Every structure is written in structure tokens, then in C-alpha cells.
Length: 115
Image 1: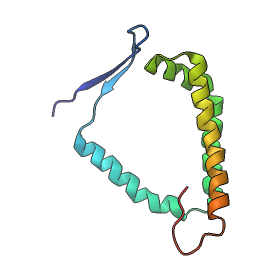
Image 2: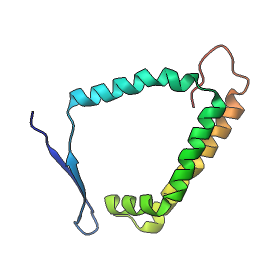
Image 3: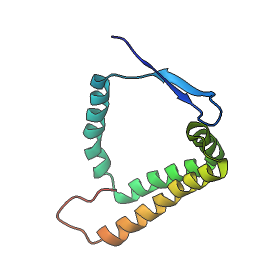
């Protein structure tokens, strides 16, 4: 099998951001199937546990704001201040999603609710 190489080029200055091997459709299908297999386990966890995991994710995003923002800026060529607002929005969406789930699904019975 021939692997193609993917290069991410900073559009603002033409420098290489990263380089890596592309994967094939068969591997992608296996990754999707693995994600589908694990979904029932995630869904069976208590909502409080899922919330803690999501809050930890937001915490890591916040702690790594500069690193993530810098990478976004290099990948897309946008100003750092704009990338920082993008990371802040991702952090904020965690709380919004948790709050929306509580408000809309707190009395939900007889089916599946997904966060």
C-alpha cells in the first residue's frame, strides 16, 4: 500500500506546520467502528461522571489556550487574538452543553439522551 504524505502549510508565510502520513479508507472505517462500539459504554456512565470528564476537557483546553491558539493560528493563518477567542468559545461550549442537557433532559425518561 502506498501512503500519501499530508503537509500542513502556514498560509501566512508558507512554513511547514506539520507533516504526517495519510491513512486509508479501511483504517478510517475501523476507527469509526471502534468509536461506535465504545458509545454504549460512554452512554451508560452516570451523567455526573460524563459532566466531570467534559469539565476536565474544558480545563485542559483552558490550560493549553496559548499552545492550541498558536497552532490554530499557524494552521489557518489567522491572528493569535482570534484563535484565542476560538479556544475560549470551545471552553464555553462545554458549560453551555451541560446546562442545556440539564434543562432539556433532566426529566427525560423512556429513551436515550446523549451529551
